[in-house]
Length: 194
Image (cartoon, rainbow, N blue to C red; front, side, top):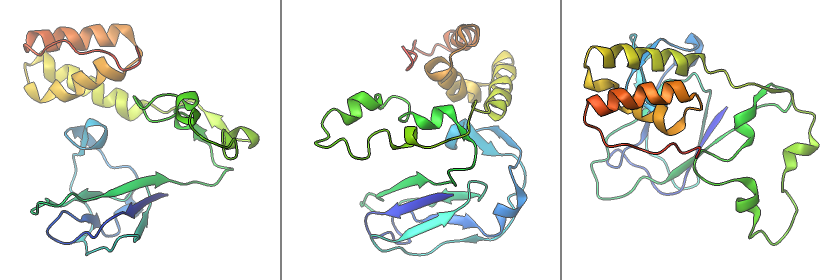
């Protein structure tokens, strides 16, 4: 489950979240290269009617990870402030990377370095978790699409190629992506895992 916590008032002017009603019933939809989360956009018709509303600070919106959602344009000079958290039963399988801080934010030792108490640190290590490898199939399909697009000179592959160079652990893929970026005259970027 995904929980979006609102830290400030969100109105129709500063980009509320919109949900495609009933879309959670359709599972994972087909994707294409895009600018959405994970470098993917939905490539099929989005089921459901878009619904939204105003939110007060401290409101919480709870929805499943297969719920199609988007932020509407922010037409104000206010920042829309919120944060997302994911929840699941402790008995459900969890992908190994989800036990680490978000990419580029440091490691647990760095995060905990200024905590005054040890309470709560590494709480999940006391659980009997079913840790499984991360399922990369959707990202691998996205990456393959980007390589095919780049071979045809399609500049829309750029963002995904950058993601590969910055985040992938496969050196051959990184080098292939960088060669396409070089052909597009995109400056070299560093891998965030280095």
